Structure formats: structure tokens, C-alpha cells
Image (tube, rainbow, N blue to C red; front, top):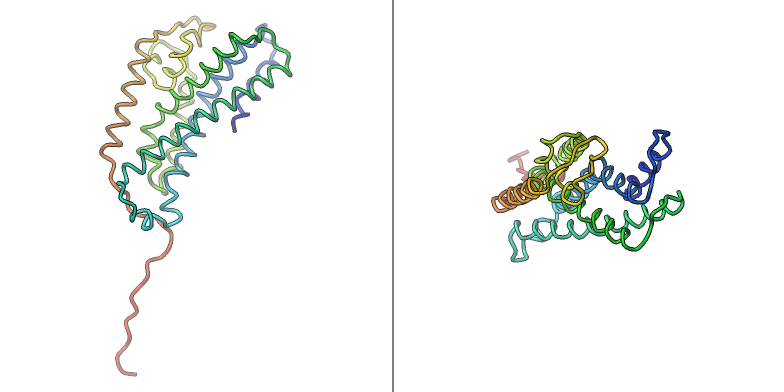
Length: 234
């Protein structure tokens, strides 16, 4: 899935719109496509798969013997999800670099290479924080997490819009923190301070939801055993 954003951006580069494509511009478009179209869905889908394994596989009763709370278990899974976010971001950057070299866009050197890798990874961590409320509200139930994935798609798509008010939209704020000029070609320059406040508030809301999270009832599909009552007499 990490190859989708670079490939889509490469397809955009074939358009005859007068835009001069360089490595900087290519990576900026990769970041925008990733943040608005693909990464919110990918991270929410993986979160739903990881978090609901105990219910779909009916193993929660085994984990219950370990002296940790459900909240601690969920926190550990969210930490794993953050590490996966960083890994996927790095892999996506490497793939984007390879595609850039094949396409022959100019402007690749160590200075901007390191800077752009940090920006893409930072933006994806911001996306992770942005979708945390959706993950905590929808992805803790095997019956609801696909609805959370659909919501994450819409959530990310609205981040592709342009306007000053989007400075306070978490998805757009994730991009603004690493590139306040991400929509400069539309004549819009964003402010970093409101974007930072938006991400911090989103994270605090997520922590409040996590702090109030209680153990969900099992959603295993296995049927409950029924007690067999013997009939008296013949």
C-alpha cells in the first residue's frame, strides 16, 4: 500500500499543465496524496485488524489471565501502530525516491533528501494522531471498525480542500506543521500555530477517550453453548 501515493503522483506528473516537476515538488505531492487519500484508510484498517484480534479469534479469555487492564493492552497496540506508521512512512519515502530517480526529476541531493524524508514521516505521524479518535471510537469493536475505515476515508478526503479554515482541520494541520506552503499554488499560506494547537487538542481528546475506555463485550461469532435439559420419562 505504501507504493500507492508515489505511483499516483507519478501519474499526475504526466499531465501537461505547465508545472515543472522537481524532486521537491514530487515529494510534496506524494505527501499530500498520502495524507488525504491513502494513509488515513491504511492506518485505520490496520488498527481495526490489530485491536479486534482477541474478539474475532476469541482469545480474550486467555489474555485475561495476564494481570494487565484492557486499557493497557489497547495502549500497547496503539504504540505498535505508531511504530508501524514510522516504518510505512520510511518505506514509502524510499519507494518515492526510487520512482523519482526512474522518472528523472531534478533537484535530488542529500540536504533536501533528509529534510523531505523527515517531513513525510512527520506528516504521517500527524495523520496517526488525527485518526486516533476514530480508531478509539470505532476500531475497538469487530462489528464497527469497517465503518471507522469508511469515515477515515471521508475524513482524509476533506483534507484535500483548500481554505484558511482548514488550518484547524486535523488532517490538513498534519501537513501544515511540516509544510505551511502546501497549498501555495492556490494562493493560500497557512499558519503553523493553529495547526499545532489542533493536533495537540486532537491528541488530548484521544487520551481522554482512551482513559475512559472499558473492556468491550466479546463479539466472537462462535455460538454460546446451550445447556441440554433431559426430558423426564420416555
